[in-house]
Amino acid sequence: MKVLLVNGSPHKNGCTYTALCEVSKALNENGVDTDIFWIGNKPRIWNSGTLGWRRRCNHIIYGQGILR
Picture 1 (spheres, helix red, strand yellow):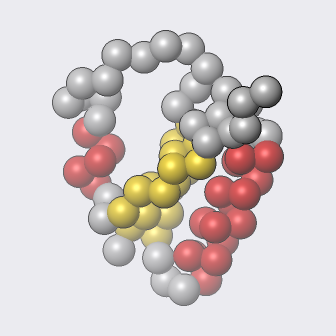
Picture 2: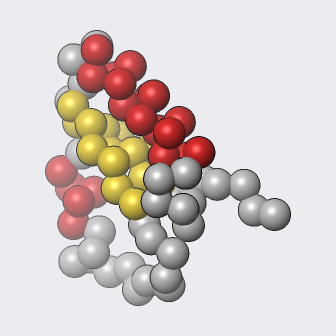
């Protein structure tokens, strides 16, 4: 099984990333393969090419930073 963890925060290595790393660590300890993907902080156009990673995973966990 493969899980993609998506970091939706504009801060690449902030608190959301740290939380996703903890989730990733727990999943890895239980035999689940994980990848962390940072969306970035610039507008994107999503299409089938940019969403190709969705076909390579079984589940997606999305982490979003808190907007202030």
